Length: 321
Image 1 (cartoon, rainbow, N blue to C red):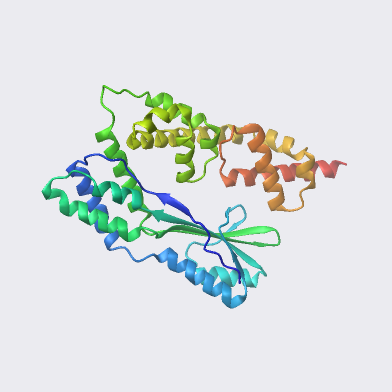
Image 2 (image 1 turned 180 degrees about the vertical axis):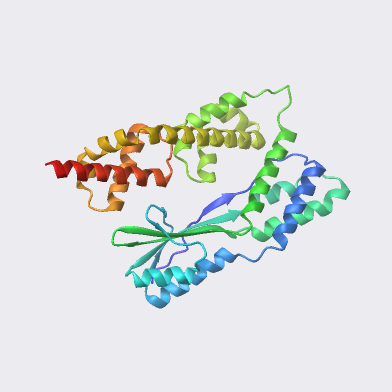
């Protein structure tokens, strides 16, 4: 077996330095109570189970890897051992593992430096305890293998994913409380639109990649120089929301043009030469991204639908020859 822990992609939870309102600390304490009763790092244990089962069957575990569910998606109720058993039965020689970890050091450091009232210390301390507890926990795992050219994938999210979302929502609330005053106006709408138009930001897949792209945008330099992380988070979230809406609109438009797009794709030499469903899907993805999306990511289901429609169109054309 070949197993590598690799450098995992991380989910960064972080806030800027400011005085946190008591109401927000109370809310963090409520979330902390949920996290304190949460089970241990269940997904981390699933990874260990996966590696043990793979070792017993002589399967290689290749990681880090990007797993895309463009073929068969295995049921979420399966265990890691179940997935390994299926891979063995289907004759797979390797498993691909993608794992996201939670990183809470930044938000812990920030909360430690906050100026709070004595009566709020219990809420702060319980929040810190919970955030330290989940630091390094596994947030999500994606496992994949190939059988006869068809990808098979299995994904699991942590049981306390909703609590992590609540932390993000609380950060947003803090942002509203601690934004720049009238003496330092910021054109948030303009910066959101500028960031959403940035190619690197549009290509970004993870939260870390989104923040890296934002920090590299010249228009955001004044905010970074002031150390206004709150405003940076607000702009990043706004740009992500704008891209999500653009993506929805784009898919609606492309769905209406699906027959036309499928015919055009079917006429390309690259698509005609693809010999498997996965190969056709990859060609379809590259083709539509290059010509019709302006670097917006598209749902996997649409790419699969486009490739299938183009394959059907190709088969029809060949039948007329």
